[in-house]
Image: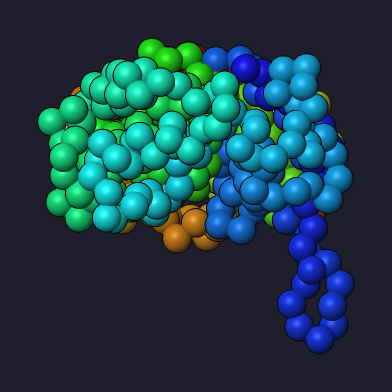
Length: 374
């Protein structure tokens, strides 16, 4: 089921004596292709859960339209939209067994939509097998682990065979190892069912690992959308560049003079086509090449061995980060006792942003530095 959001806006009354309104989602337009898993990604308070609630019907838009396929569902009641919703806190009924929790949505169906008792039991069993909880059917929620409760919540949402599956921070209550396992299973379930899925998260690693597309939000506004790797490799602005990536992107104050990028007193890269100006410079951790004659010199703090990779931790007076992290291959020899380390830069991993607007400034990747990094 394709979902289309057209100029979606949601305003809430402001708290306090001054009154007024707070805009949670502002003119949000986005198309979610049929059968894909889309992540709404952004920091707390950016409007992603409000957007999900409007798709579900729990919140009524202040403006804009919502379409499921060709059907305008903007004013349609939640129970008539054919959606399955999984909340952050699971929202299981503590007095019911796993079987009864999964069965509950089917028992609430009315008229011609209500399946027979035999069909209900069949669908409950099939859904339980899909999420691998068929051995837990007679337990109560308090007897389950967090991961098992999450699977029950997903099964309860899927048993109705929804047109759309909506997940609001579904993995945030799990520990790191279980979160990794559950997100892999969630992706497998989504692929097997082919249900269009919208996944809300603030965890960029989570979003990038399982999503077909991501939509990055900030203050209710869509900053950028696209396939995860494309957004990572080609951020539209400094906010997106900073939000995606682990370790985070290294941000420097720089300036362009004569189509050369300067960080501190050093000319580090040719940036053909960019006028002279002050800029923000973003360099991905994998964008550094250690070289004795490299263009950028930094103060070496330490070298961290991480198995297949090495993290060089350094400092520079022009860097806005607490520390510069450069990720290189473990086969590279680094003198950890040295006071300084020099780098050449990979132009494809260097991004320039306007100093005031923080929008992307694009340059042609030519010159000596580019040739050396190749």
